[in-house]
Length: 124
Image (cartoon, rainbow, N blue to C red; front, side, top):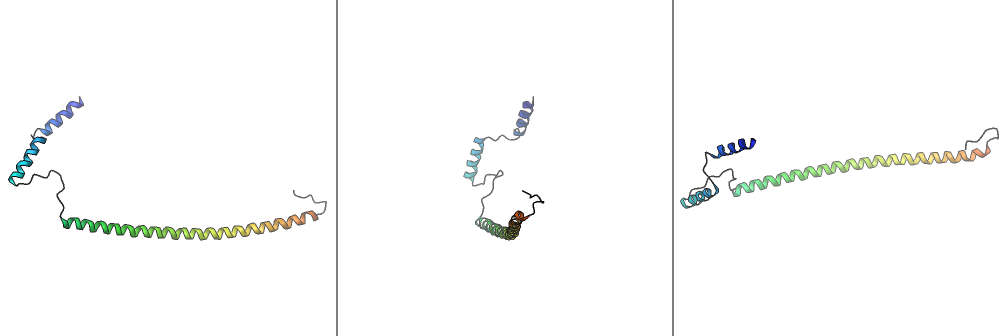
């Protein structure tokens, strides 16, 4: 039954207009012969040179602004990366120093271990 409702709705909406593609062509020919403009049914009108130039300038301005924003984002990102790299280099230097200290301590303890009295069991 929904098909009937859809058919009746389309029939009722088209009931007020008797236009078909052939008649549109005839109306266009008649309008061209009489010099009248055919009605613009939702179509964009032709843009003037001034409108085109204004739209081009707006587009160029938007593009410039967008490019500047992209450059600023890139600069901020690189600054952030440089700061992070510096922090990581400092952390790496600290860890290398700690490793070196622990290796020295380990070597010292290994040298002391054989000299321990026999009453103290070695930790091996």
